[in-house]
Length: 249
Image (tube, rainbow, N blue to C red; front, side):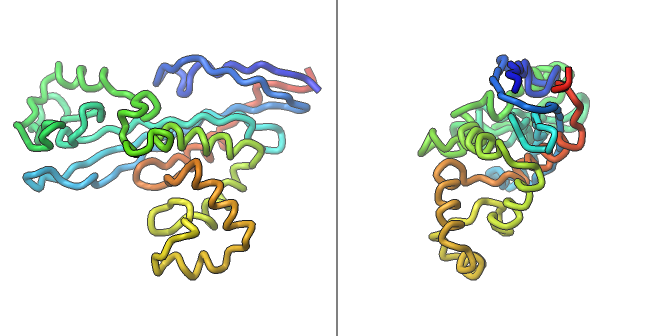
């Protein structure tokens, strides 16, 4: 049995600097590391007060350690989400357009009203990109659950990451296919009264209901939906895995 201290200095290597993270892992075999990323469009969320659509893109990134049997030893997921400047949030990463192109509606995050049109200069292009933060970096300002900071995006992702340890990617995918709704990709709520959910929930065992209650106590968001193809990023990390520690050496 060997003990290996593995320092993951960054989630996405040179793409998104993060504080160094370290985990002490007890291993008895080879260890593999994989990195995966996915990009997905979203038509929305919604429109501004002039009924001009909002558009956004989510780039999901996953850095994962696997054992020789493909079991997850450690996983770290983050997402860059950016979109049109008519989204009413001061911390939402904006992309107004390429320099020299026609501008797009700009919204005041406080009044949520359109206050003008972007001037797509080279300076604005550079300024917007330099200000981008990932969902983890945005923390509570991401405001997915302003009523409950313990269920903010980063906290829910942390829960899922811990929950995945010891499982294979195929097992996580199988769980997601069985225990999340086709409607929104979120874990089934055993107390749901939605007509689409009822016949499916009725087939779950008592143990499965208890499991869902436990999972939903820490995470209710989807692992794969228009807000980010995070599960697919983890699957890509597995496909891209390389040997980083050999137990034979």
